[in-house]
Structure formats: C-alpha cells, structure tokens
Image (cartoon, rainbow, N blue to C red; front, side):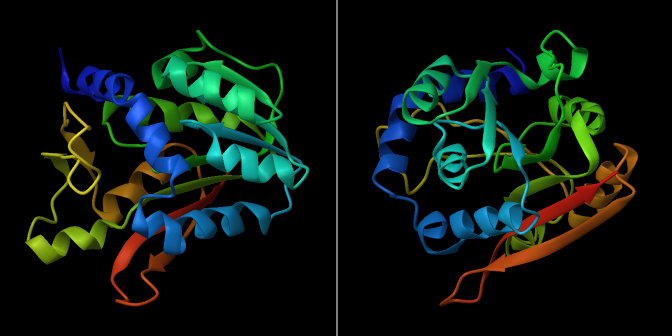
Length: 223
C-alpha cells in the first residue's frame, strides 16, 4: 500500500472518530479561529454555488447552505458523505481526487467557488486535482484552500518540501493508523497553484488569537 492509499485507509478507519470530535467542536484551533476564517473567506465573494472538495462530514457545507448557497460536496469516505447528506441540504457524492482529475467523476455544471479545507495532504493526487479544477469554475470564480501554515514547520527546523511523519496526537487514543503527509513550503505551494492554471494567487495568514502563532494559510486563487 503506497502512502496516498494509506491516507485514505486511515480516514476510512477513523471516520466515526472524526465525526464525533467535530460534533463536539473538539479541535481547539478550529474552534477559536480556522473554521470562521474559511467561512469568511468563502462568503466575502458572495458565491451562489460552492463545491466543497474533501467535505468530510459536511460541517462547512452545512454552514454555507444555511446562508442560502447551493452546495455540492465530495469525499472519498462513504461514511462522511452519508452523514453530510443527512444533515445538509445539497448534493453529496463519493469521489476521490483521482476520480475528479481523470474525469471518471465529473459534473456538467460549474461553480462560483470551490473550497478545499485542510484536505490536501498527499502529493500526486493533490497535483492532479488542482490541475483539473479550473474547468469547473465560472468566469471570475475562486478556488479557496486552507492548509497548515507552512512556516509553522520552521519552528521545528524542518522547512523542506517532502513527506512527513504524521500522528493523531491530541485527538484521543481512539484514533489509529497515523499516516505520512506531504508538506510543501509556501514557495512551493504558490508555484504549484500557478502551474495548475491559477494566474492570480493571493493568501491570508491565520493566527491564533491568544498566542499569535501561525496556524494556517488560506490561498485565494483565480484563473
């Protein structure tokens, strides 16, 4: 099993655990700032339609749907899609990034915004997915990506693009099968987005409101 497949298998095994911790609002960084940051990043463009890629159990899709936005969500984990479909008004489908990139899974419609929230943690599938996204955006449409702030790795003197050892530390002993994840420097993120067809790429940094530590970065991309 390669590393990309290990990521998928880990999320399938831990799906119920993840749903439980999200339902309890149990991740401090999400609770205090990163959830609201991605909501505001999407809503400032007033999109009428949003595709949430890697939507998980659908918390973000649900918030956006409650604001009157037409929601489509995809995820590779069947359990996530079933929960999202029960809880949120929208269209939800099981699809991998490879399915989307290859055209095995496709839409006849396009979107005002596409959002990927903390869901780009592999290498090849991320590169393939991003290259396929421009054709799904309406003219002037935005791709919004929130991910771990790359500069946070400078604190542990490991600011180099490549596979990193991961863990479920801090989420509880019920989480099993940690996986390696693919880290990109800020410079490599910007290069990848440009190479994927996004000529306009900006970003906003998200910091902890108390410690002022860098938590995440939100890329705002346009073709």
